[in-house]
Image (cartoon, rainbow, N blue to C red; front, side, top):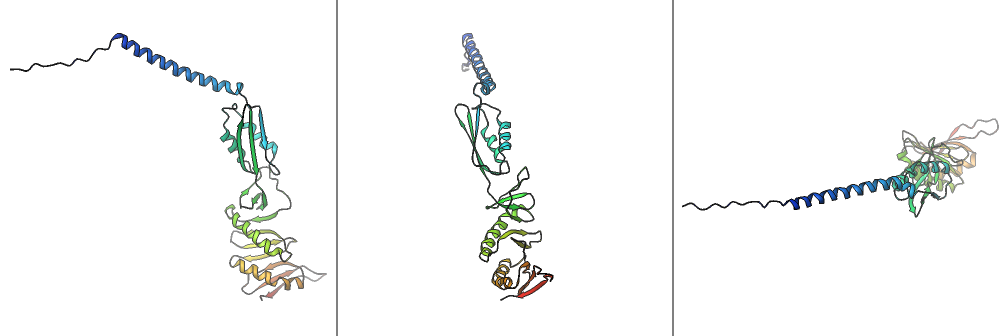
Length: 260
């Protein structure tokens, strides 16, 4: 005896239900298109309706050219007060050579404030750069360097923090002897040298530079009692060589002074 079979039939979608779905989809598409269109129109008209009318620049500027800063800002003001990209503007300003830090913010209804803080140059660095007390090297785009700064240098910029630290340390120790450090250099071989104000060169070599500097400090009273040195060479195991400033017609040749 065969069992009766049951067929499952899918309920048919009524024409009204189908029409309702189509209407809803068309409505959603129209709404989405309207929002996109309104957004596009808003982006096009926002700079006209809500323009940036004022850009204020705050901060002390000594090395930074205000004209160069204004030109940089003018090139980046492309939107209105709402759509202006402040992150890009800040990055462009902070990329200027003298700028250590830059901040930007909107001030309703039509003003953008740019605040800058300059690097403080401690000394000149190599031929065309400047260096801060933290060992940050920067190079003014106009090539102008302040006068009267000490001269520091090394084979590459990565050595700047070490050179700056030596300059500050050696400068304070030699100042106690009445000597002013006008420059510190480390050449490509790693040799250290000091230039004193007045033109005296101090050669410390590569190794044991701290001990050699202490040797100079200990012996300087003897050196000063003899005459004015123009070159002090401490690259010796137990002494130093001195070249003197000529007195009268006599040449100031090198002389050895034994270490104490």
